[in-house]
Length: 82
Image (cartoon, rainbow, N blue to C red; front, side, top):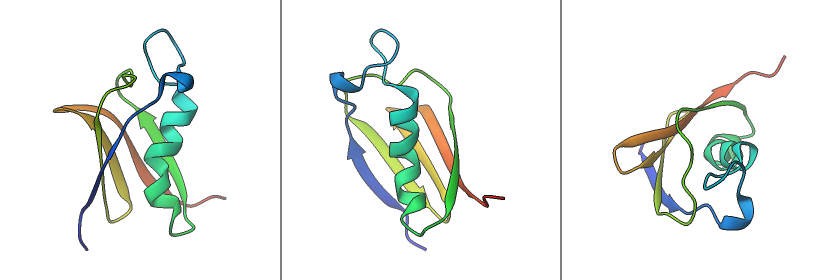
């Protein structure tokens, strides 16, 4: 499969903790490429998502990762809902 890369930006209106994106919203953005196939997803945030900043969302084979430069902000994987 081909790796898909897109650029996303978390708007200030989706602020969670001060100067950081709301975890639920950001997790949804990370899961979006995975749920396009109808699969459930599990997402884990690794660092506070910055606001109003260009971020890179990469997805390939049931796995997605959100980066700020070289810093991994969060990752998601396809999952089975039971």
